Structure formats: structure tokens, C-alpha cells
Length: 344
Image (cartoon, rainbow, N blue to C red; front, side, top):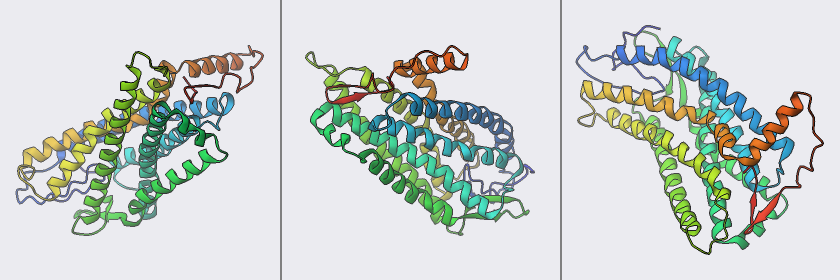
């Protein structure tokens, strides 16, 4: 894959630069060289950690925890979302080295699965936070969560909305070619409508989730600081850590893809060559940080989740041949202030 394309010919998925400079000296050679070296190495590490960590989370949840708990059901779905997101990384790593070599249908399927993982993870984290907010602020409301099939219905609804959000990537992404016949996986159309639609959709989902979660945790932390509060901080600490890291990772990325839309619109000063190159570098770095989120959740389970560490130690002892007499998997499932404590 050559690195001599001008910005005017480059329509890469990450980022979608579609510059139209008349100055041929403004090219993306340095940016492309940077991402073709750093991205595959970084993604390889993330893929290994994510697969090992999230599969381990699914195994421990299934083996030791009560999956009828809404919190645990959401944690299972977040792990599945992270694995779906991870499934797209090998293709994007290859993309940055050799261009798109997986055909038109591969472009559509990989984009769809990738964004399905992204949107489902974002929605599950948001709904999980709202559930935690309701349990802390209105304890009696969790009675609904104990009804049969409630977890299943909630999960199905969230996956339905996630599929709807990711579907435009399947419909409108396709195999496209640059002027020197290099293949890219990009939105079709000359007016960049669907590219901009995809960017603004990500921004809107992220902004709504951020505002919702910020409000919920502001109220939760306010309740925890009350002198007579009976709510246990450990019931919210793990999810708070997961959410904070998620937003710290994804916020710079969402800012840079918005700046990318300004480049597409040729808004000053982003239509200046050096400014666009700077955005390109920042986009690459923020993308690496954001895409690494899929391997971080299991790390927080280990360092923050007391019960998870206990389950992990038990599993390792069993694997080493020191099987202990197992306790009933639901024997430690308790309620505090109307809210289940699980994986903490």
C-alpha cells in the first residue's frame, strides 16, 4: 500500500479525510506512515487482551454468578459488545497496512459488527447506570427488576436499538477506489451525506449518554455523601470506574471525528493543510485510546470487584487441581437498599 496519496485522494475509514486541496504538496504521507506502523501493533495487543479478558469475564459470570440479576445480565452483554467491537480490529489493522482487501460484503459486515459493538456497549453502560441510579434513589423501583424475563426483555430492546444504529454502516458503506485504484471501505456518495450522518450520529449518542450518566452519578454521589445514607459505595464504584474510563477514552475521539466533519465541509481553519495534518495525528492517537476500551473492563473487575477477584482465585485453584468444595453459586447473592450486589 503506497503512502503517496494526496489528501484529495484519501478516503480512509479512520479517519474519513476527503480533502480537496489544489496544492499537491499537501499530502498525508507522514500521517499514513505513522498509522500504518503504530496501529497494527497497538491493535494486536488490544485484541489479545480483550479476547482473553472478556472471555474470562463471561466464564466467571456464567460459572459463579446469578445471571438473572439485571446488573450481571448487563455485564454479560457489555462483555459481548466488547468482543464484537474487538472482532473488527484485525480487519482495521490490516486495512492500515494493505488497504481494504476483504471485498464489498466484507466492508459492510465488518463495519456493521464493529459499530454494533460500539453502540451496544454505550447503550448498555448508560442503561446500567440509570438502573443503578433508580436502585439508589428509589429503592422500591427495583421490584420490577425481579420480574421473570425482565432482563431478557431489556437486553433484547437494547440490542434492537443498537442494530438500528449500526445498520446505516451496512447499507451505505461499500468498497471504493481512489484515483490510483487503491481500495477503501467508505461511505458511498459524492456529497458526503452518510459520512457526516455517521459522525453526527456517534456524537449525538455519545453526548446523550454522557449527559445521562453525569446526571445519574451526580445524584448518586450526592446520596452517598449524606450522613445518614445506608447505600454502600461499593455498589456503584465498579460501574463508575468503567463508565469514567469509557468516556475519558471516547471523548477525544468524538471531538476529533467532529473536527473531521469540519474538514469535509472545508470550514476555516480546518481547510488549511497543516491544521488538517495536525487533526490527522490527533485523530490517530485518540482512536488508539478509544479503541483500547474493549480490553479495559476486565482489568477493572479484577482491581475493583472484590467478588470477581474471589471467583477468579477460585477458578485458578480449580485449574491447578486444588478444587475446593464449591459454595452454592447464589449463596452470597444479597440485597442492600433494594439493590443487588454482584461482582463487587
